[in-house]
Amino acid sequence: MVGEYSDGRIEVEFFPDGLLGSLTETFMGIQEGSIEAGVIHPYADLVPGGIVNDMPWMVNTYEQAALVYGPGGIVFDLMSDAWEDVGFHLIMVGAAGIEGIGNTIRPLKTPADFKDWKFRVSGAVAYTKMIENMSAGTGLTVETVPWADLYGALQTGVVDGNWTTCLYMVEERQCEPLKYWTALNFAFDTTTLAMSGDVWDGLPADLKDAVSDAGLAAEYFTYEYDFRGEMVYRQQLIETGEVEIYIPTPEEISAFREAANMPAIWAELGTPYLDQRYPGQNMTQQLLDELARVRAVLAGE
Image (tube, rainbow, N blue to C red; front, side, top):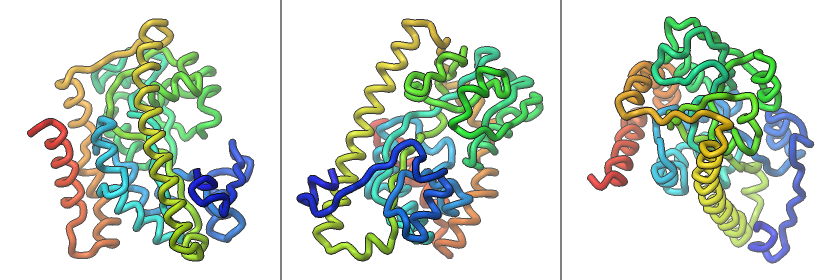
């Protein structure tokens, strides 16, 4: 789309599947100028403000996510600043699914069902804190496993569970080792495309427009593709019985959310960054108020 929207003045050479290195190596390559752009998840060890992108229990539907993570949304605006702080320009935040929790042990219906699991976590520190809080006292342990190794780790029992989406269960074939999945809908997984801030600053206005317009079109595509895929794949999993899917009641979801203790996670991880980046603005409360407003608007309140 960049090539089309720029009338061929920008040609993008695509290197899939880590051909340019790991996520961290790609990030460093963009910072040093050997790579112009990349799909990089904003883990907080790379992008300190990325903690905002990965706070769980902010949204639980695609509709909410579109208003929060899309251009003009509060998370998009905060993440644009966060990427700028590390020398990048944010092009788009695409959809990657609504997160639930899969496992190989038992249906997850209450926090007590985490008993004695070995749970795969990543660099999303707020997610990890959430899992630790929700499973407190159950004997669950967390294991950091690279995404590329997750299938094998589930298959061999290195880990018993992980956060995942219906999309990943089908397209990454996680449905083969997994036996159960609970539609907890605790977070929105994202795909982030960012480019070198120096490269962006060097583009004339019309080519900046071409890149931005292409990013917006691609974002629309990912939301539509993933939303449809989520429905189709969930139905496929239900019909084939490959994974037993559990849909918790609102009361059961509330029990998980209460156990997650999100106020403490915000106080430890989110608010210190936001207070430093936006002094005197009480940005945490602004963000939480906007999330509540979006939920109310979509609920017709």
